[in-house]
Amino acid sequence: MSELKTWRETAPRLVDVAAGRRPADLVVRRGRWVNVHSGEIVPSTDIAIAAGRFAYCGPDASHCIGEETEVVDAAGRYLVPGLCDGHMHVESGMLTVTEFARAVIPHGTTSMFVDPHEIANVLGLAGVRLMHDEAAGLPINVFVQMPSCVPSAPGLEHAGAEIGPAEVGEAMAWPNIIGLGEVMNFPGVAAADDKMMGEIAATMAAHKTVGGHYASPDLGPAFHAYVAGGPADDHEGTRLVDAVARVRQGMKAMLRLGSAWYDVAEQVRAVTELGLDPRNFILCTDDCHSGTLVNDGHMDRVVRHAIAQGLRPVTAIQMASLNTAEHFGLARELGSIAPGRRADFLIVSNLAELAIEAVYGRGRLLADREGLKVRMPAFEYPASARNTVNMKRDLKAADFEIAAPRAAVSVTARVIGVIENQAPTRALERELPVADGIVEMDRANDVCQIALVERHRATGGVTNGFVTGFGYDKPCAVAATVAHDSHHMIVVGTDRADMAAAANRLRAVGGGVVVMHEGKELALVELPIAGLMSDEPAETVAAKAERMVEAMRAMGCTLNNAYMQHSLLALVVIPELRISDAGIIDVRTFEKVDLFV
Image (cartoon, rainbow, N blue to C red; front, side, top):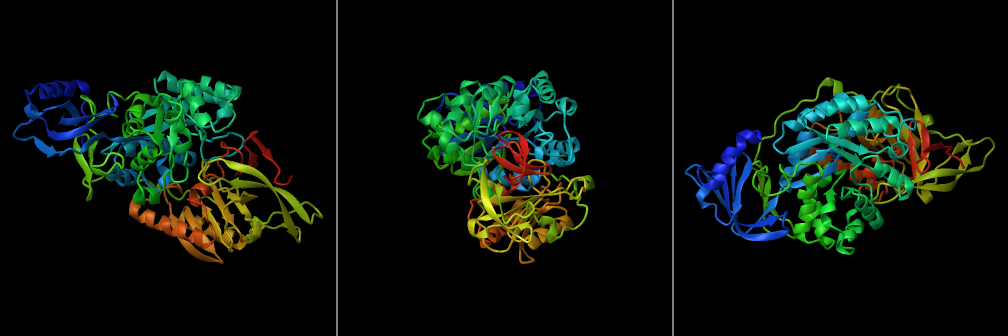
């Protein structure tokens, strides 16, 4: 990677280059400057770069060119700031930080603000440090937010580790920590919980940004109490009113378009229809799996989508560059094409379609239409980050049997209702038959079983319940050790024998995602690092993930990106109904409830 020097070391050279006293390393001529500060496109612009930073941006950089200067002719193409993802989880891509970066660089992403709370829930502070150190060696800017909620909801789940104010305070001194990750325990903040207040205070004392996560539709006193507690942004809004409420309270509304979350279109109306100030809106992905990255894109996909909703291209780019940098206090470092900033920029032939022809990071060509042009550094995860599926024993079909109340011929059961393309679920009730004292599924009406298998401490615990929305109509099971945020194992299936086979297969391979049908393995994505990430190339993982998706479809699933929906069914901080190692959780009241009504 190209090392950035301190401002004291770099500024004299930038001044000399801009004045014409010393030559630039790189000059790009005759471009259309997408200026996110002024909100305009400036024609016939040259940019000069030295020591990995912009030195001159103006009509003629001929005075910056020397014998050793590389000159690139933009030929009227657009010069666009490198794109920033303001909130994301690398682990959702099933990739290491290095492989994730390799996948997204050709799509124009040059800065990422990552929250590694997935690995934190498995490996604790040591896992965060591993990803922090890996991120620091990359040729793009990867800043790390210290996970805040491990576990996400104390008392309602038991993760593989715990993080509190002491760990947060320690991490704030690490060089690549940019702030506190999404504070998901919003009831705790609203109640002024000591742990949450301590973590936020440690972050504030370090003058860093507190990330938000208010996943309730209630915009009354609880919401106002949460904002008063310190979170500065929120990506959990899904409605127009959510975006408006957050911006009015001084928060940044983060609008996400991930592999399964489509929350931009509704909320961006706050800008396109209501005329709210777009500088308070930030685009992000939150969760993207490898297939989306390889086949559809990353932040370029989000920007194109935002433009399609009626935003001016410059405004959409602003929401994915300068707005993000300003929010994290980095506007003098990145987020725009302007003197002194890191020379992260794109050469784009069509602005509305964001047709990227070249990607530069710190003044160095990283990718063009032929692909990646930079060698990614090697990073090896140690043995301590592997073999994390700690089950007491192999499971049997009987472990997934749900006993009915005595003498019952049918029961009314609470059922988790999946909502396509959204993170929330519905709390539903369904009448289910009983046979030989065991509650049966109702495949004809799309009610199958869900189980959470404890995998951190080998307790042997299995929590059983019901879910609807996947559409499985054949004997099958899908199991995954990716189960936000506690990351136990989630098994969803229509056949209990297949559920047991799927769980045992993941135990054997050390984690991943598997699809079983009548005892046969249809697809497997191995995730040996913390049961969350692969150490294979992004294209390999994407191909395996595509086979997984095809296998789920073959079993009758019609959901868009059903795997992402599957992975959130244990997320006990997003309403309405979830499953955890503690039982069935009603997130509207943050209480454990009985499976039967």
